[in-house]
Image 1 (cartoon, helix red, strand yellow):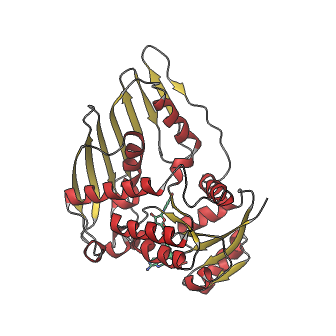
Image 2 (image 1 turned 90 degrees about the horizontal axis):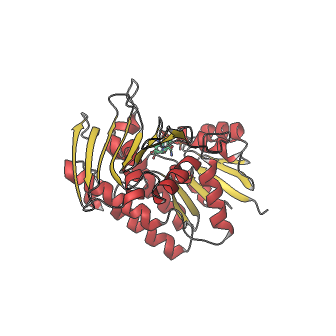
Length: 330
Ligand SMILES: NC(=O)c1ccc[n+]([C@@H]2O[C@H](COP(=O)([O-])OP(=O)(O)OC[C@H]3O[C@@H](n4cnc5c(N)ncnc54)[C@H](OP(=O)(O)O)[C@@H]3O)[C@@H](O)[C@H]2O)c1
């Protein structure tokens, strides 16, 4: 099997989990880790077995790396993905892909111009429990879904992490965690015909909490929320005309237990294969599959889907007045 040379851009928290899971991916060569701080890059590289380390992102994009995983705060995704693409490097970029749809449109056009692979690291899409839930709904296992509820909230620690609250870093609960309930609903049911959203701003102006409602002409409604103020169940329930499917805490994560409740039947727990690791190996394997087959985007998580998601997040922000500086310039 040809080895795929992975590079990590930004050695923070999620990069550590992803790098750890890369050890579970056949054919993944841990090629280089890049940080703004050379010492951090060195420590990260030795902890996770990367061959090279760099004290700047520029050195990584100029190296012989095959694919770069961008794991900086989402306020920097546009700048950092652009840097990679301009150097002809393939990219897997953490969610939220960008701050707004215009930034993403630009990156998609650039990836096409440079003829390189680009994908959003929406890991949930590739998790076994999520795929099975999706199949069940498509098969009509609980009839027609009429209501959806999903939440994602945690009480953020003190001192407050800058990444979560600073608008320049893309702070706010919607883009950080509210994106998961929105992703789930969009993936299963498409764009809502109508939406409403209300939020409580933090002192920096970004949303500390948000409550979102979707409605569809076919008679479905969804109730979604996210919060940095309180711990919430982090569950999703899909209520159908003949039963319901419940994804337990944390619904977006491989440890979630999925239960099907059918009318007049005992609840049934979905059986799902469990692997070691955090669950980021599934998306990494999929990226390698795409690269091995010369694909420039994922057939399972195409760029058109990521753009629809970003446009929907723009609509939600517009509805409740969440603005970033990037909305002016882009
Ligand atoms: N898929 C998931 O499950 C998941 C989970 C958590 C977070 N995320 C996403 O991953 C991204 C990073 O989140 P994280 O929690 O890993 O953040 P983090 O721990 O704060 O790490 C971000 C890294 O970005 C780099 N960076 C570059 N410029 C920066 C700046 N001006 N300020 C702060 N950091 C800067 C730093 O790395 P160097 O100093 O090493 O260059 C920093 O360690 C976010 O977009 C987030 O939404 C995804």
